Length: 373
Image (tube, rainbow, N blue to C red; front, side, top):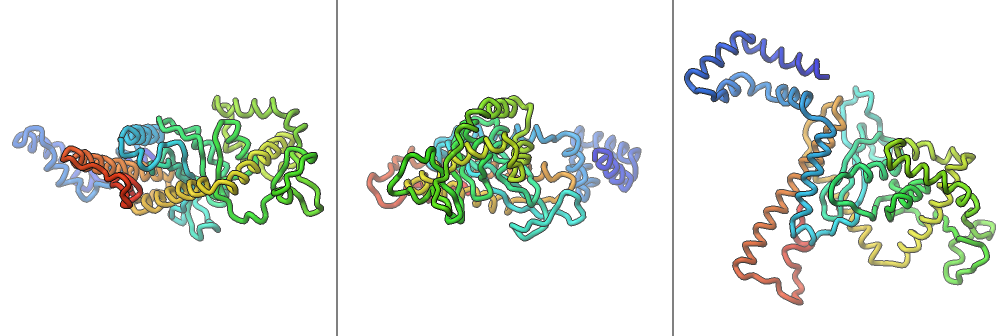
């Protein structure tokens, strides 16, 4: 890839008359303009600006540097007072959106869910609208297997503990792994009629919700706690291995699929996940405020997806991961700049003596009526 970039630059130089001719021009410009080479750059490289930018990107920009830049913007954004009006950073929403790529690309696939050809840009967006982490995932995979990996990769000062997603963002093993790492996974799930609730024992009857945990034959669905107790040391070893970087959570969750029913590790993950998801479903049913929060955060993710798509440019099939991180960095910078402008205006209003009206029906400028995207 770097060799291809150098080759492109060589072609640009040759079209401009060769290296010797350009060095002579540089000396001439230096003689009359001192060290101001901008005229020369405009003369020779204006039509080839994309080539020069591509060379700089290939030689100097890495995924680690892009992640560090995103982290710096998130940390600076979190210091603004106006940010607290949109969220405290305690929750994060995850969702994917399709990104079109070239058809002649070995990494691109057809997405049945999104109805197009390309890859999936998976974003982790905080409840205050800023993207904490982003990555590319293949089409056709269950997006939930990538949730934990992105949360652990988030190196910013904003460390959410509650995770909201859609139906694609949950499964029994994912609920278990999220619980082991201290994350409260509360997804927005469709097709409730087909969901199964579980009880901790068949010796207890819950008069109002007893029917929820009964199967087709009338028997109660009960968690196999004996299996969980037996396999609990193995579950902890898996979690520690992931935390220490010895095992990738995506690799683990990909292997712990429904085809692994005879695997005791999978069965233990499934039983713990059944327990955690049942509690999450009951909380979802009983708490209208929680349902509103889940909807609000997942809507923010969808809003970020649309906003980042509007800002996106470039489509290099060899740099898809960089493209999505560049795009997230650009979107975060625009959001940060907007929040800075709003902060300046609000401080100016306060300096002029403006005070928010108490008990007014109209929302203040820092609430839901004014958002960064």
